[in-house]
Amino acid sequence: MEKTVVEYIKKARSAGLSYEQIAEQMGKAGWNMANILHLLLSLAKQAELPEVPLAVSAKNIKKSYGSIEALKGVSIKVPFGKVFGLLGPNGAGKTTLVRILTTLLTQDSGSAAVAGYDVRRQADEVRSVVGLTGQYTAIDDYLTGRENLELVGRLYHLKKDAVKARARELLDKFGLIEAADRPAKTYSGGMRRRLDLAMGLFNHPKVLFLDEPTNGLDPQSRIALWQIIKEQVAEGRTVLLTTQYLEEADNLADVIVVLNHGQVIAEGTPEELKSKIGGDVLEIHLKEISDAARVAELLRPISKDEPRIEDQLGIVSVPAAGGASSLVAAVRLMDREGIPISDIMLRRPTLDDVFLTLTGHKQA
Amino acid sequence: MMNTISDIAAITRRNLIRYTRLPQLIVFSTIQPVMFLLLFTYVFGGAIQPTGFHDYITFLLPGIIVQTVLFGSMQTGIGLAEDLSRGMIDRFRSLPMAHSAILAGRTLTDMLRNAFVIVLMVIVGFFIGFRIEHGIGKFGMAVLLTLLFGFAFSWVSATVGLMVKEVETAQVAGFIWIFPLVFASSIFVPIETMPAWLQSFARHTPITATVDAVRALSLGQPWHTGFWQAMLWTAGILLFFIPLSVYFYNKRKS
Image (cartoon, rainbow over all chains, first blue to last red; front, top):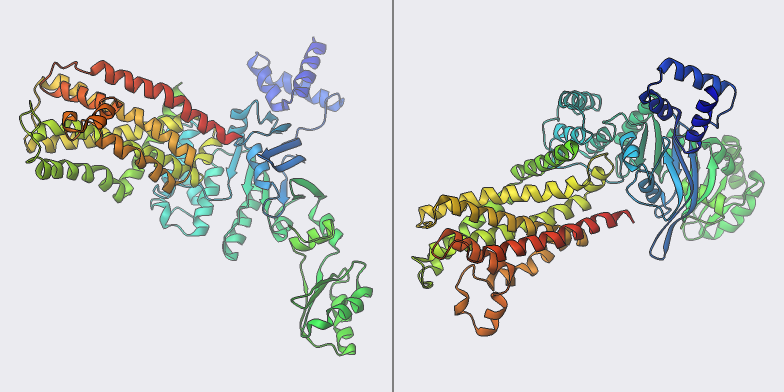
C-alpha cells in the first residue's frame, strides 16, 4: 500500500506538482490529512523526493517577435520567500519574460512553472496564485480606488462581503482610505502606483511580479514603495521584480540576474555582483579635458581594473575597492601633479558600471 | 458558467460606471442622436416627402434609430483600444477570469447604452409627430431587431479596435467606412430618389435591409417585409466577426 502511494507521489512530483497540490489531490480522494502529512514528512526525511519546489522556474525560454529575438534561451530559478531582481537596460527582455511567466504571452520554446503550475498548460491555476503590477499603472481612471479594487475582487470570484472587506483592508493599508471614493484620475503618481500594487495583491498572491515598479516615481514615492515591497516579503511572499536601477535591485533583491540582449550575463547576490565591480567607483571631473589620458595612467595603481575615460566630458572613473583611502590617495596624486579638477567623488556603482565590468562595454 | 456570467456582469458594470463619469461620452451618445433627429425632421422634413408616408418624421424615425446604434457600436472598438493601450486588458488577462467576458461585457455595455438612447429618441419622436401603425408588440420587435443589429456591428467594431490597438486610429478606422454605408441607404431618403448606380449599391447593404425591416414593423407595409433578410444579415455578421475578434484578441499572446 505504502509503496504504491510513494510511486504515485514520485510521479506527481516529476509531473511538476507541488507538495501542496499532491496533498490536496489526495485529500479529495478521501485521504485523511494527518496521514498524508505523516507520509509526506517521512518521505522527505528519507530524501526519497526531489528538491524543494521553486516559486518560479524557467528553462531555456526563447521568444522572438518577427526577426527580433527578445529572449535567447533564458533560465531562472526563484526559491519561495525570496526577492528576485531582474536587472537590465531597456529592451533586454525583462518585460517579455515577466509577460510569459504571468501567462500574458506564450513562449516559442522552453518551459516555465510558477508555484508548480505550468504557465502554458495550467494558465488559470497560475493566474490564481500570481499578482502582477505592470510597467504602466493598469487602473481605471474613471472608477474610484474602491471600485477598482472591488472590480478585481469580483473577477477573482470572491464572495461579495469578502471583496468589500479585502478592498477596505487594502485601501487602509496603502494609505488610500481617504481618497477611496474619489475617481482614480485625481490621484497622484505615487497613489496610482499604490492602488495598482494593491490590485495585484488582492488575492494574496504567492508570487508577486513587479515590472519596473518605481518607474517614473519621485524619490520619496520610490522609497515608500520599497517599504511596501519589503513588507510583502516579510509576510512570506515571493517577489520577482524587474528594474533598470542597480540601486533598487541592491536595496530589495536577495538574488539578481542581469539580462542583456535576451540573455543572462550574470547571476548572484547583490554582494557578489558588486564585488565583481569592486565596491564604490572613484570619479574625477577634470577642468582640462586633455589631462584625461595622463590622469588615467596616474590612477592605475589605485585599482586592479582599467580606468575608464569619457573623452568629451573629461571624466575619468575607476572601481575603487579601497573606498575612502582610494579617494584620499587620488586627491594627493592630483595635488602633487598639479592637475586642476572641478570635482572628485566616490559614488555607488551604476548599471553602467556593472555592464562595463561584465561585458567590457557600455550598455546598448 | 456561473463564473462567466458574473465576470460579464462585473465588466459590464465597470463599463457602465465609466459612462456616467464621462460627460462627453453621455453627450455624444445621447444628446447628439436626439439633436440629429430634431435637425433632420425640421431642416429636411419640409423638402423631403417620401411617398406613402404620412410625414417625414414617421419615415425618418425607424431609420435614424438604426443609424444611432451603428454610430453607438463604434464605441466598442474605441473602448477596447483604450483598455488595450492603458494596460487594463493585460490586468484582466492576468486574473483567473473568463476571457470571453472582456469582449462580451464590452459589447453588452454598448447594447444597453443603445437601448437607453433608442427609448429616449422614440419618446422625443412621439412628441414631434411620430406614430406607429402595427401596434406596440410589432414596434417592440422593431426595437429588438435594431438592438441586435447594433450588437452585431459592435463585434465588427471590436475586431477593428483589437486590430489597430490605438484609440485615435480606432476612431478614424471606425467612422471612415460607416458614413458612406449610413448615407447610401434608406435611412434618410427613399432609395428610389438616388441615381441608378448608387441605388444598386444602397439596395444591397445590410443597413438598408435592416432599416426596411424596422420600418415595416413600425408602419405601412406588411410587418414581415424584409424581416428575414435583416435577421440573416445580423446572424451572418455575428458568425463572421465574433470568431474574428476572438482571433485578434488571442493573437496578443504570440
